[in-house]
Every structure is written in C-alpha cells, then in structure tokens.
Amino acid sequence: MLSRYVSEGRLGEYYEAVFAELVADGTLRFDAVIFDARRWYEIDTRADLRAGEYLFSQPRDNAASRSRISTEPAFRDIAA
Image (tube, rainbow, N blue to C red; front, side, top):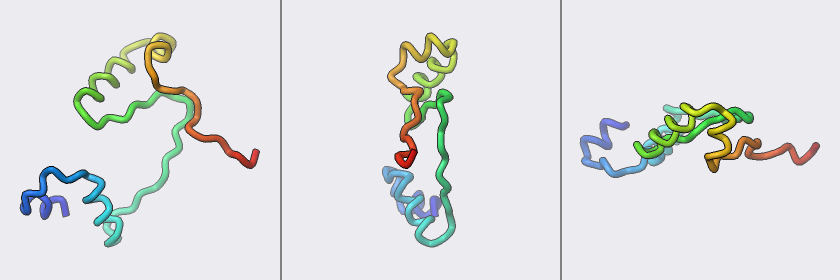
C-alpha cells in the first residue's frame, strides 16, 4: 500500500490516509492504548522530537513545571 502511494507520487499524503485504506481492507488493525499519568510526548515533526528530548532530559519535577503537558488522565470514568 505504501509503495503504491510512493510509485504514484503521492508523497504529500497524510499517513492516516494510508492507515484508513489498510484498516478498510482488513490489512491493519488498531487497538486503543490508555496512557496513565506517566510522561509521554507525541512526535510528529523534528521540532516535536527536540521538545520531547528536552522534556525527558529533565528531572520529572522540573520538566512538568516547564511543559504544557498535563500529567492528569485525558478522561475519567464518568460512571464512577
């Protein structure tokens, strides 16, 4: 699938477009992942990578106070 995108010159497509086709034809399956309060950082660009490297190079207390990343769970069980 990816090679087809490349051979067709569709190099500016978002990876989600390829994923969507793979999921639709049953080639790929995703499972949900729940993150707890540990630090994490989504990397999409080289700038994100540098920010993540900086975040994880700092002691947890300093990094948490300097970042805009929440250490709270993204959602709570509303039935509780």
